[in-house]
Image (tube, rainbow, N blue to C red; front, side, top):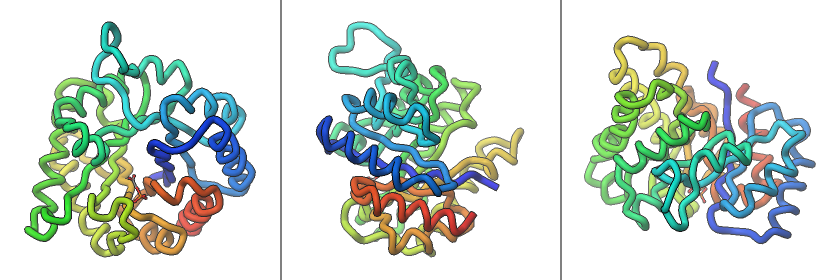
Length: 256
Ligand code: PGA
């Protein structure tokens, strides 16, 4: 059984004060939640998570990490800095970073390697655009993006600790989620692609967690999370509201 993970990606939102309130509300509401929760604030609010969540079961992490270890890289944040603040996870290759900041598979793989070397679990985001889906290219696009894992496998022995998030770009922030059947179809295909990457450890594909992201809300979470290959959610907009985020986690709990 793969442990469910409900992750909240706060993107570039919040102030010190609003973030404190949101963390406290989530802490308060999460008391009876049995699935793992993880929060992803902007870098500058990670110290607040470190302070306020230290005695809780709630994990946290960053939305990005440098592909470099350390040195003269103005504006970058390294994996060891994130580990120093007790980050458990880091999101890598989010479609906003691929599209707006032109991140490539090689850069994303390097970020994963930095994270894994610092004992941080990368959450690798993949997913097709609407145009790609309409052209029936979904599976070839996710396969191409999963090349990151092939690069990882050749360069980092901890590669099997990666988490995948399937996030169709057309569903992100649009209010239009993939249907549970559409999502399950791609999740199962991703697991099969991963399985074929490692003939020596075929069980790895059964253990890897594949989250779904893209307009996950309290009212669609239960049906998405009921699918056999969907192991959690990466939630954007709804994670900025403590009640909605916790309601999504409760829907996941019903499955377990
Ligand atoms: P959304 O964002 O839930 O607002 O669609 C998801 C994401 O970008 O991770």
